[in-house]
Length: 335
Image (cartoon, rainbow, N blue to C red; front, side, top):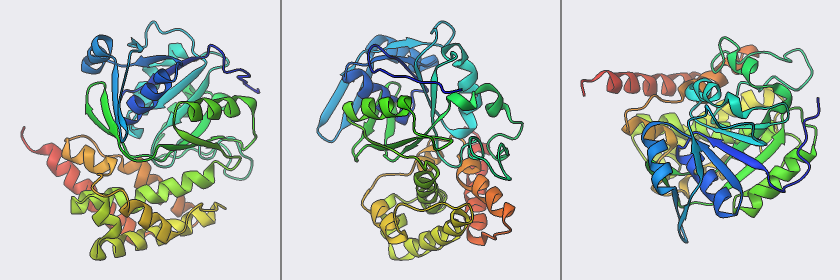
């Protein structure tokens, strides 16, 4: 099935999940004049319904009103962005199912290796589940593969309060079909995102930028929790950057084993991370806020793919294990 969106006119766009990334995307889309509905609940629903969305950028604040829904009455949308932590994605999809029609473009904006990694392509692994992120193949069941479009978001944002976020670094994305076939719908989406201020390009090899982002996350996120350090220290400090570089080397071997071509070299990854200054990784933000960490998608899934080709990742195993222990210990402390 070739699900297409052939025109930018009057598209109905839904952003499910008003965390830092969801707030950033929804605010920019709405400020550019797109018809946006946000699926939210609890304090986020109430804040967005009463005060709209607010995004602080380097050149000032954006405030915009959007429609808000709990998902039960939203109706079919043309585009559905799913913006959540990987472990929360299934619950978010289930709250958003009324938005998905036969031609809805579903765009998961998540960290790590996605459940669709082995879908859309031929070969001996075609259709294989990534058990670290979709152990029961539920995501593959509820999200139509033919309607799924890959997305790689490369910007650091932080949720300040319900409906409010800050993004002081450049906002960039890559969009690509998961079967690597260019379609009109993905070109239209790229045009919309560029027009709203997110520098976006189209890729016909979406797994290449995906691996670049996966490696950037893997070399910085768990280590930032272990060291409780911002990116300028994780990637630029003499002691920690040595560890980060070794994590990159382990992950690059796995990426190469699946035919990926990285879009930046290891030194470029470290320089990019160090250039983020005092910015905290999303995993460090979660750790300090007492939330569950995305270790399964960012580390566990890469370790799973490594095991397919018999590749050892000892340092990744150790660092992610320490981060997991710290998280479990922190979550088990009395409030």
